[in-house]
Length: 216
Ligand code: AP5
Ligand code: MG
Ligand code: ZN
Image 1: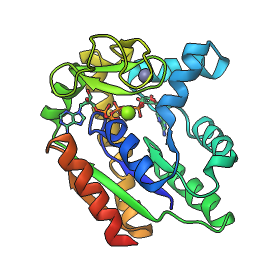
Image 2: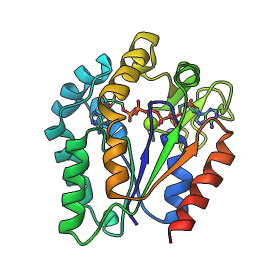
Image 3: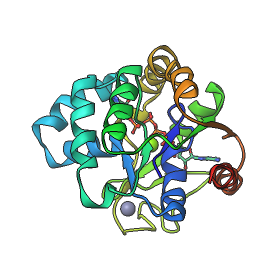
């Protein structure tokens, strides 16, 4: 199954991805996580991505599409993928649909995590992220068992560079201008389920799994 987790920054895509990817038995592919891994490893791609990420802007489509295509060629991605943070433009969505079609696959479902801007700002301001595995926490809603240490892998848990207030606002603007319109495209090309992302983490997960089960 190929599933897209869609929604604004801070809607809970990363938080939900772990449970959903496990339940569906498909790998979690998050373009933001891929860029942050490159940044950490000091690659050329990481340097290029940093300029856009720090400004709250989108990395150019050709770069994004290339890294996703490379990821999709890996063995574990053959049976489907859970996309997080991709596609973010109509051009990316079209390329994805073409790639899936060429491989006898399609976008089986889209989960649209719906959340108001005020809630987003509060969530991102309190977010903490694992430097090693990308797991996401929140200082109030979802802290790691031991402060600064990842529950999942023992890595260091820190604030993301782009979670500063000015950058959060820029990311939201970018979302409304460039990414929100992708939802209309997705509605024309796949089944879209809207989930109320303002609920607790467990309820959001339950709603996502129920929506996906109703598809199969
Ligand atoms: P990316 O890493 O994808 O960031 P984003 O879309 O801004 O989304 P976030 O990761 O900030 O939010 P999330 O929905 O995962 O929320 P989370 O689960 O962490 O992209 C970063 C940058 O990379 C982009 O700005 C761009 O520059 C570039 N990029 C990436 N992909 C690209 C693409 N396809 N094209 C072009 N450029 C691209 O949750 C947030 C917080 O809320 C956490 O603290 C969490 O603990 C808490 N929380 C979650 N759910 C709940 C809940 N139900 N109740 C209470 N708290 C909750
Ligand atoms: Mg995320
Ligand atoms: Zn970790």
